[in-house]
Image (cartoon, rainbow over all chains, first blue to last red; front, side):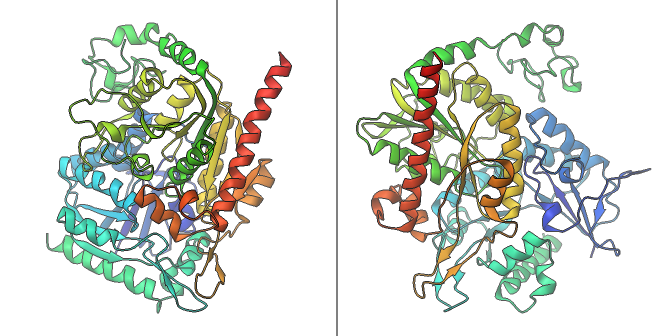
Amino acid sequence: MAVGILDVDLCGPSIPRMLSVGKPEVHQCDLGWVPVYTDAQKSLALMSIGFLLEDPDEAVVWRGPKKTALIGQFVSDVAWGELDVLLVDTPPGTSDEHLAVLENLKKQHKVDGAILITTPQAVSTGDVRREITFCKKTGLRILGIVENMSGFVCPHCSECSNIFSKGGGEELAKLTGSVYLGSVPLDPLLTTSIEEGKDFIQTFPDSATFSAINSIAQTLLTSIQNP
Amino acid sequence: MADIPSDAPQHCPGTASEQAGKTSACQGCPNQNLCSSGATKAPDPAIEEIAEKMLTVKHKILVLSGKGGVGKSTFSAHLAHALASDATKEVALLDVDICGPSIPRIMGLEGEQVAGLSLCLSPRYVEDNLAVMSIGFLLSSPDDAVIWRGPKKNGMIKQFLRDVDWGELDYLIVDTPPGTSDEHLSIVQYLSSARIDGAVIITTPQEVSLQDVRKEIRFCQKVQLPIIGVVENMSGFVCPKCKNTSQIFPPTTGGAERMCEEMNLTLLGRVPLDPRIGKSCDEGKSFLTEVPDSPAAAAYHSIVQSIQAYCLSHVTREESAG
């Protein structure tokens, strides 16, 4: 399967580090910008403003119109090639980046839908309710809700602690008539892998966390293949 | 002229922006000639109006982060509670996270919307000496989304600063959304003639967070905003059963401590993960009152004291400079 990730979090681009691609240069070809591939097989293609910054600590201090313009370019000028799935990672909110990516994608592509991520707490689901309204108002199908940071199992004694409360994701799905895709626990092995840009799924295939993520991915695939 | 005139095209860059009249979106706009002549880039009179308003506000503190979900709003709320615990101090908390206004819930003011009075800009009071303003109060439903582009968000922030009757305040705390964009530029721009004491920057221990926080620090340097210091949130979790500590968000590159050493900044403190913090926020209560004896509460108090000391030392320095 060929997958692309478009990172439109222009102020806080985390995808390059999480996928451990270092500091590659972005080249142009006849068809546009060449995405950065994570492997020789080109199974995962990435584009992020993180690749375009000389200095990784450089702040992107841009107002909305400039962000909108770059996102337009990311959508139309990157030579993604044949992809099975393009994932778009967005910053929090319902503003320029979200409007820009949706408007530009819709010009030439079918947008299957949105996955909404929340933590279990009411403070988080409170904001996601507004994100759900954004989706409804813009005609974006909601593929489902994922509850992240859903409980922590102590590696020393196996006690489960609900650090960020419990159950909010499922309640939100019920309240808003959305599909509940599942929950992903807090897992220091996952957070360490992401920090170091390692492939968690390769390194810890037997973990409950992998099983949770995998189950969500399978449900999503089924959902987009059978709309 | 309004930042976005009513007859402006969809991607209007804003009349005060450097791109005013010059972007492709400007083609055909009736204001294009005026904007490109530079006439609309005259200093916004609101800046002086806001400076005038802010004369009765002794200390202004911005709470920033590069990254979302690190606990900015949680920290801002508890900073406000802690400062207001001194009944002789007047404190206000301004929430400029226009798209994701969490402050009303965290401060126990959810449902304080006044139906039909969407232009009402009176702050709401948690205590007699603790006022709060958020766009959350102007929305009639918890499902309402604020789907605004930058220029409209900027207009709201200007109104919050200029048109809210803040009165005499010892502290105005401004909670921001993550990033280095419209909201952050606008707050700094509109307060440019009023002195901001500084920014408190929130991070978690991970490099994925610090990476964005370094950008936030560069933003502060770029706009000459002093940095009071950095708070490392979610810094370790002590299992309530076996009391072992787990680093759920591991400081793989030395955490905030090393970043502060490298960038010559003050590490104000580290707050551990405590499920009771999130619970308090969800219930709109102050964690500091609910669980006063916890290590997290002690960490908050120490951080707040450092922030107060910074603000007071600034005043002393300015007074002696004459």
